[in-house]
Each structure stands twice: as C-alpha cells, then as structure tokens.
Length: 253
Image 1 (tube, rainbow, N blue to C red):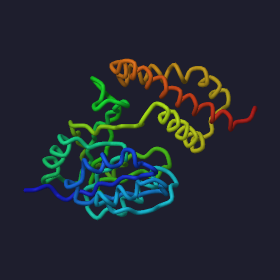
Image 2: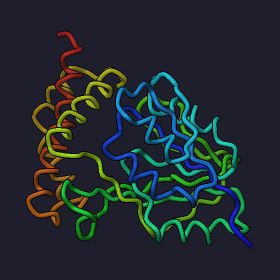
Image 3: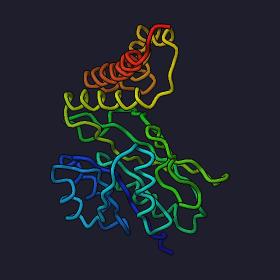
Image 4: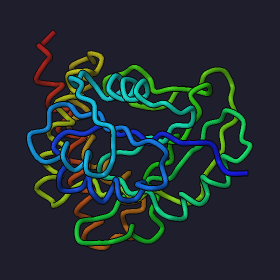
C-alpha cells in the first residue's frame, strides 16, 4: 500500500534567498504545498508559484495564528510543517512514506538540525530541536500563540519519533543572524508576561553566560569549531537582548 496524501505547509516573508531549496526538497513528493505569505516584497511569491505551491496572503499576527491559518488551507489530513529555511532530507521522506502506511491519526517528532553559513551539513553530534512537525489533523494542531508555535495534541494520540532530520539554515550570514535575533527579541518582549523588575535586573547579569553555556555545551555547538562558538555567543546575546527590551518596559516600583 502507498502512504496517504500529505499537505506540506510553510509561512513566508521575504525568503527569496532560501525558499527555492526548501520547496525543491518536497516538490514532486508532497501531494500539496501551501505557502502562506505575509506581504513579501521580494521574489518569494514568484518562487513559490513556480514550484507549484498554492500561495495565500494573510496578515501576520503571530507564528501560531499564521500556522493555524495555513492548516486551514490544507486539503489532506496528514500535514507536514516546515519553515522557509528548512530542507527535508531524502531519508526523512523515505521514512515518512513507510511510517504513514496504515498509520492511525498520530503525531511524529522530527529532529531539526542547524547548519552554519558556508556549510552543507550540521556539525557533528548536532542536537538542536526535536519537535512535532508531521501530524494528522485529527491528532492535533498548532497552538494559537503568537510566539510559541508548537503542535498541541487533541486528546492522547500516539507520538512517534522519526530518525532522519530536517536541515535548518537559520541565517544567510552572521549579520542576518543578529538582525533576526533583534526582531525576535522585540516580539518576545512584547508578548511576554510582565516580570518583576528585580528579577529582570538579576537576569540582565546572568542571562548571557547561562545561555551561552546552554547553546555551546547542552546543544553541542562545542563540536562546531569557531562557528559553533560564534553561534553560541550570538544566540546568547539574543536572549540577553530580550531581557534588555523587557526591562525597558518596566518602571521602578
């Protein structure tokens, strides 16, 4: 038996530099490709249309709402969500074909592994994210949260693990990483629940070193050489910048 049909969906905004590679990895394999764009001013929409994707425009109000809108445009019950800077590996496609044959409504976790600029594969022993990206619409859907876009189960469906990864190319160069983290810190600070000023002042001192060690050691960027060290440092700066922006919203009590 062949696997059931799959709708692949993604959200975009000015992703012309990376989108073609992302769509090429699922073109001819996915039974439907849905791209929800939030007002790109570059060639993003044209690239998506050339790849045979169905393109929809929707104002961005947060990651969760945007992905829920995209879910609504999918015509098949099995859904695979990818980001515009992610590439589904051939081994993962093969595993999905096997896993979905006769599968009940389920959730499947998938490893997302970062690739540094100039590299074509993740660092050795990479361990970045392991999240649900493949799921049946009867088993769950994306959380309606502007920042924390995670699939929430509906009831208690089976949760399985896919071994093969998705490669994630999160930034074109180091400058774009800084700009991306600045935008993300602004969104996080805006959406975060208010915290006591004294707590933020403590984290102003502790956040950067703690986050650096988390990225460098716990997420194994220590195996990425100088690029791993640089990534851990810049990522830690992004988390620290979020604290700065949250602190700027508070007043002395």
